[in-house]
Length: 370
Ligand code: NDP
Image 1 (cartoon, rainbow, N blue to C red):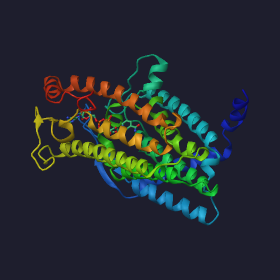
Image 2: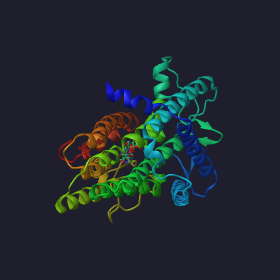
Image 3: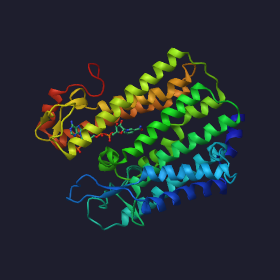
Image 4: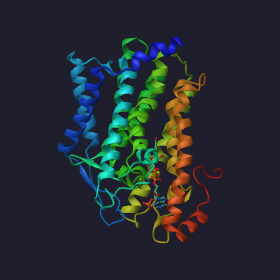
């Protein structure tokens, strides 16, 4: 009861947190539209059209981190501003997600546009339509909102981590666990933006409509729950042995190699189905499905890599508490569910070719186990 009473006031968003959020979104909208970046064509949609995405996320992120660094060096911004206002930023972002998806729902209902991107998909059940969204690729002032929100979520995660790191340094609390966690996450997020164009062929971008599920996932879930380990390490001290540190680095490296390698192989294959995989011409099923490299080991080896990475973000916290393992446990459940949904989608799309691929590659995520 006391804890609830202590937390509740901290959850009420102040005007400062609204301003932080508004400034962040405005910054992203402006730099996303003006900074240079490779323009990548998205997947071909059902009506034969395709969207184009300007992949300037890395530049936008580096510029933002540079500006924030400069601002805090000049004592203009407090480096712990996000860490100090974590709960109210969480609720402000949650409220924003609810409001923006209600607007998306209303705009989707009104839309008469019949293109694949904007065609309204309405079941008539308000909760279903608001949750899953009505349109595939809604835009606001020329900005593709789906691409915008996922970018905001990934950058938000790094900004929260950096602010928590700032607090850890100010409290003279910096230790090996915090350094490992911060380093792994920063590398993962930077890598995401280096390969931002690969996002354009992922399930979220090509198949999911923009509703509360996706907006909440991008804006609230990614930044605020993936950073739990950082917050936890502020209050808990962990002593890691050298062997544990080495093992942790190996899990991260293995996860990274599999995750990035698998996603890259599929991306390259989609662009050039003849490109060599691991120095050999690729095995292709029905002219469309890659069955070489990671895609010949398990049908979703990329999920395995991501799970190892998620585990490596939690291992620096030791094993005294399940709390820092929230992210890998959640990801395991999500990816098992997603694999099932993707399987159903691919079985319907590729039919007998998919059945042949399943025979050729029987494992879903973990070879010889699942
Ligand atoms: P994938 O990138 O695995 O994309 C699945 C699609 O790829 C299928 O629908 C199909 O689409 C195509 N495909 C599947 N098998 C083959 C094949 N053998 N050959 C050619 N094409 C194939 O799925 P996701 O978008 O779910 O995941 C992308 C990455 O994002 C993963 O690494 C995942 O771990 C990560 N992720 C991370 C999350 C997180 O919270 N950390 C959440 C969700 C994803 P098509 O119709 O185009 O052929």
